[in-house]
Image 1 (cartoon, rainbow, N blue to C red):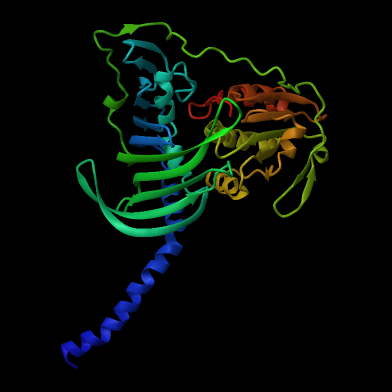
Image 2 (tube, rainbow, N blue to C red):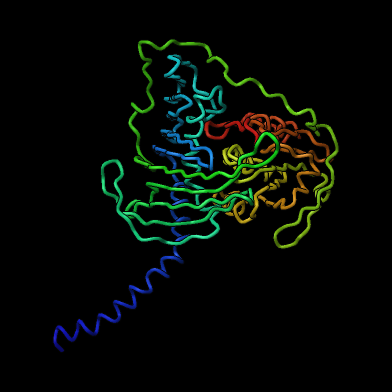
Length: 427
């Protein structure tokens, strides 16, 4: 057989394979997103930098802003978070022994012993907003695939990242949103060789409330470039050192820019009351009554995947679950997501194995007077609520569990840096 004849015989097969490739790639889009998300979720240490540009438009407005964030964390408790935006800048650094908080625009900094919290644990002023969000860079990537409604592969692209050419898979997907009137679609560029995200672009259409109770439509476009993504890296010690500039002043604490917001007058605290009956229905249709656990203490967590503080609290709750479930504490979570699959995927990625129920019509929340989330509800063996708090700190929950009975006493004394992160913020 001649070489030309052989080539003619092979060409039809090559054409068939080329034509089949896009269909196969489309089927693999969701699997690729899951693989990449899991890579971030499994990382024990990380160094991520992001450059975000956001544009909000409507018929009458156009707003653009840019934010630079850096998140570096090592499994030995050292960390560095930076945020720079139009609202100001701040830096939080810990070498594992000492923690520094620095406000460059105010030329002020604080110095204190490194705490058990993984900062920033709360926001004192607008200049800290971007730094607070930097802490969630790894979480956003780890749960990127949890709320995918549909996904498809676009044509591969080579883009420039930090001066280097990077060959990328490009995935397009639609996200499941809590607000049914809003839409959000994403394009994600994934480094082929490292399976890390190097760029994202999202476009959405939503509504902003007006003073008269109406709604104004607006469009959102956000582009994020990740010039640095290092997972399970060995970071140099210099990343966790801070030298105060000559013009910076050491202060005991920063001026408080955000005034305390009191709880609403209709806030209900059920502490000390008997727990109401709940009939919890699983996805399989099985009904479990809360009263069926009488004689055992029960902890109920109200949460959602779209709630940042809830997501941030979940690793600490997972650790506490492993310490208390075998001692007899019953764990239940109730999500407020629009689609229950988002919550199921999230919990699976976090290796949280307690039963979760989906509050599709808000009934469970209404029974327990749920306001903001995360909301933690602890019920003793006699059915009395002993802990009822939104935006709680994990240390407060530990203390409440320790008081249930002698076998739980040790729980109140246990804490680690990664585990004792307070939620505080309520959504």
